[in-house]
Image (tube, rainbow, N blue to C red):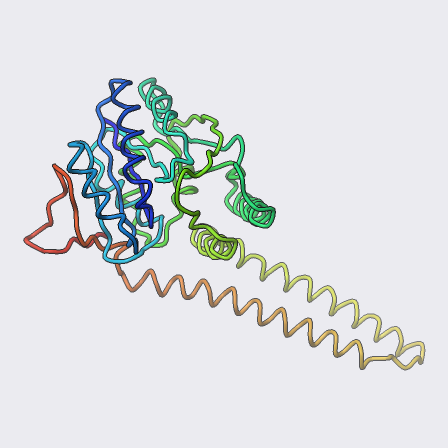
Length: 319
């Protein structure tokens, strides 16, 4: 059986459509399946639509967070709840073409443990958003050593790969990179990003920048290494100015130092403040990790065969 994990945030207009389309495709392909919707603290009627879908389809289950925890947490909650021998993560807006799930599944049957969906095109988006996305993926690719220029969350994972991801205890995770980092027998399929049928994109340029900062600092220490580079650059500039001052002194030429000193002080102060900012960001990440708070809190579940709350608790908390 394949589990289809579907994170959803304010997607009430797409739940019924997504359910009908994916269930129809998998049924026609004679593939045993379950759909696991994860409502990431939506403010609209998303959860009610998920409940309706679970009543109409026996293979549909739903998880509702107590509040918005973010897409990464929703993905991991869905993987934790998945009961299939493999699971595929797909967006609720159907911009990931669902017919590719069958192709991914057939490749899994051939022995591949991870099937990554890579973008042949990014679909329609603003110039600013496209530029921001290109910069982000360029930085994360350089920092991690993994080509993520066309990467996406649309991928199929074997049960072995799922278990490895779920056993990672870090709280701030970057699914897109981690699922590539863990290795296993991997292949890729290309797809074109489809247009939205309903609703609006939840990704603005501002949210993409925040997403980039969080994931870069969660997955790599490259920004900390940048501090070393800035320190070396500042040292080189200081040495050059020191040599110039000594030469002018020997030649008996009065060095014009006021402007140079002001520029050097501004440059030094900026470098120090930026370095402290980077280190502070990482310290904040360490602080968040050691608090030991869960990735997400499940407030409610729906559907047949849903996960039972453990030890009589009326709320399920997952690390």
